[in-house]
Image 1 (cartoon, rainbow, N blue to C red):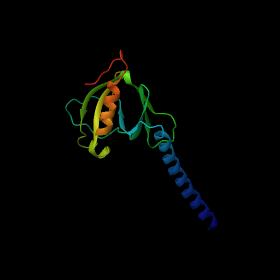
Image 2 (cartoon, one colour):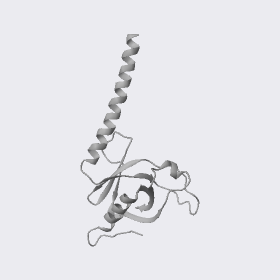
Image 3 (cartoon, rainbow, N blue to C red):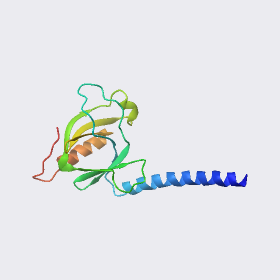
Image 4 (cartoon, helix red, strand yellow):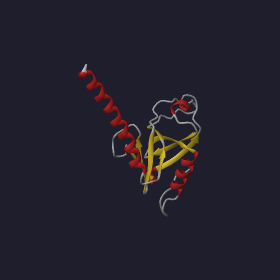
Length: 150
């Protein structure tokens, strides 16, 4: 009986520590500012006019870091970004509202931005406010740098 209580207590403690570390990591990412909620879908096949499915979306946090945007998975303990997107390599292809199953996979009120990043098709989903800031950041490239905003 005592052993079962110790095991249950240890499991509860581990779960609480894990949740605390998730929260702490997110606070550390956000403390430098310039962060926004951003879901990402990497290497998306071009479906033409077909309705996109909700598969492949990963919830994350993006952070501006000079001339690049670092993207971190929310449900990860990794201190380093999962993806780093250079400003000069991002080409905006289209903007659209989520449709079909995507509406369930994404946070409400998000807009999907289709981009090309070095030949790889990427979709970013973010709020309207974050989208305005992201597009302004893209257009604010230093003189002589290529800007690819549709």
